[in-house]
Amino acid sequence: MSRDVLLNFNESPFGLLPEAASAARLAVGQSGRYQFVLAEQLREEIAAWHGVPLAWVSLYPGSNRVLHYATMAFTSATAPLVVASPGYAVCETAARLAARPVRKIPLRADGSHDVEAMCAAAPAGGLIYVANPNNPTGSITPHRDLMDLLRKKNPVTTLLIDEAYLEFCDQPSLLDQVASDASLIVTRTFSKIHGMAGLRVGYAIAQPASLSLIHTVPPHDISVPGAAAALASLKQSEALAERKATIRRVREAFMAWLDQRGIAYTASQANCMMLQIGRDGNQLARDLAQRHNIHIGRSWPEAPDWVRVTIGLDEEMEALQSALESTLFADAV
Ligand code: PLP
Image 1 (tube, helix red, strand yellow):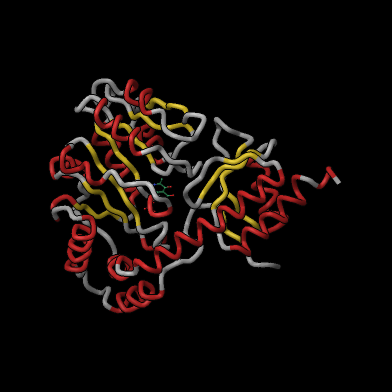
Image 2 (tube, rainbow, N blue to C red):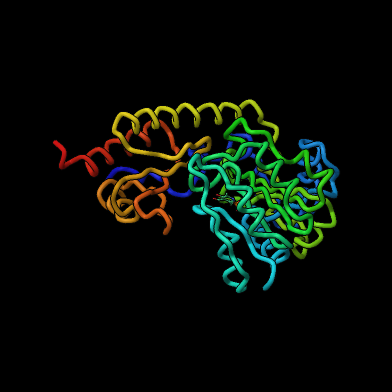
């Protein structure tokens, strides 16, 4: 049986960079100790990398954790969570578990966030969550729209910009706005372009007053191998730039194939996108897994005939293309 092709969870197909993998291996041998100093070093490196004070950087075992904590901290029975539809579900799931109100705002036709509607949905407090690029669509919201959102929203409403996929595109970060806006939180992760999803390292950058509301106890609670790998990975800017270029090339080749086959897709600038396949997306995902060992993402309830696909290596996308060819177009011959 052929090897499973994993295009389902938006990880990096490249895995850890070799320098990160050796640092992690070495660190396993030293993991009998807490090694708090390593997390501190990583915070310092991240602060220097982004040019922000150390006190603005908080580490988490994956950025999901900070999305959860921020939802708990900044929403209440009267202060809603505002998210895009379709969008990344962690904040919404956390809000629903805690019975907090959720307002879902459809993406605009070009895949960008409808910042005016999002602003209007949280007129007096709460949390607006924007992933840029967005998951599952991979689409981006232009910087000027996010600046508008920041300017126009009520200052008591918190804005969380999730930049998990930002390294895959050429969009500017909103990090440089943190200095002048205490209501802004920006999150990043080592799970995507760094290829460290299983090591669980993410972080938030915000002014200390906001960060203090989303601290874990104890703070900066990441594993020793995770910290060591992240420290090593951060230094590999050339290799990271190569990864970005490769993902873009493979994504564009896949899009060209989709155009050729007449399959609509979202305007992705990241390592995931949605395809409109004209049938139940979750069923297609099951079929591809069962018949071809190819695992793609899921559908969203609001778009049942769309399905998410992660961009993988050339050969993985070729395998997906031929599986889609035989599954979607078999009757057409
Ligand atoms: N934010 C977005 C938009 C994601 O798609 C994901 C994971 O898929 C995450 C955050 C979570 O990343 P982490 O592995 O850092 O928890």
